Image 1 (cartoon, rainbow, N blue to C red):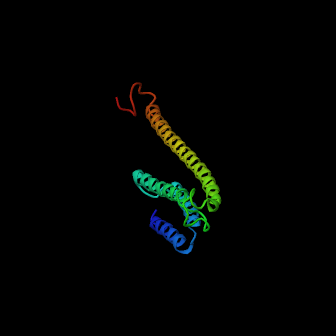
Image 2 (tube, rainbow, N blue to C red; image 1 turned 45 degrees about the vertical axis):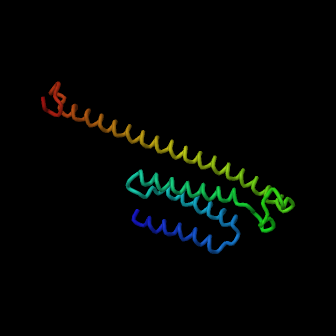
Image 3 (cartoon, rainbow, N blue to C red; image 1 turned 180 degrees about the horizontal axis):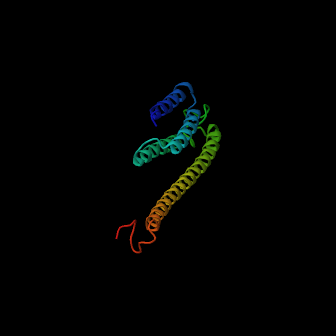
Length: 165
């Protein structure tokens, strides 16, 4: 894919735009997760590199960046403006109720996201294994067909392949 570097630059520009324009850290994280997930899907569909190892490395890097972003969201000290400056639980217990509820729901969302990503990866892996298996089977059938064709070219020559004894 000759234009793939444009996709890489676009991904970096979108992430930079999110970080520069959005002020709320949790909104930044959520939009970054959605953006990274979108580019993971695009990369897994395109497989732009000639070498499969480089494709795998890029996919691993994207997944690691996604996990890093999710972890940053989960461990962010305060999720709302009201609780900023307080350590939850602790001094600002009345401010932390919304934070604790949000972190609990975010944890469930992240867990569901991990399960989804794992299932998608398993599905893609199974599909790739099936494609390789089909390719090998097709090559074997083509090879067998060519052997049979070579034998049946000269049916009068018993024991000869293609007229050669």
